[in-house]
Length: 138
Image (cartoon, rainbow, N blue to C red; front, side, top):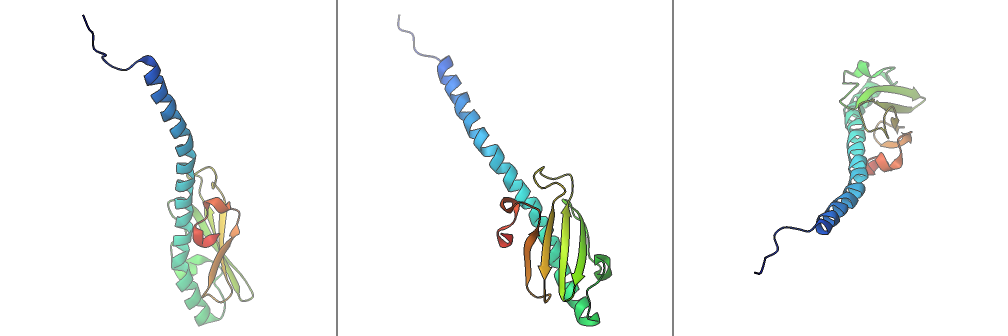
């Protein structure tokens, strides 16, 4: 009597599990970096509302405000715990501090956006690693 093969052998199943394990080991760190970059992008997005307000405040008064509530915008988000402004001479810096409910690589870190004329902004400051920054901030 001839018996047909039915199902997979143990070796074949072990090979499939090993391949899935290798793929997961590569994919999980990449996914975590991707989510951290998305969370940092929120900080850059929140500062977009400040840029216009800061420029208008400076145009009206000749100085930058001492806090961001003076221009009437939100100073926190889902991933950003707080935002602060500081000025020195004609330069202004907006500092976004990441919260604790974010990727561990950026928890509590800061991203600084600065400008000398309220028109052109750079975001090379802060202590967030370059791999987590949006491409416009590298």
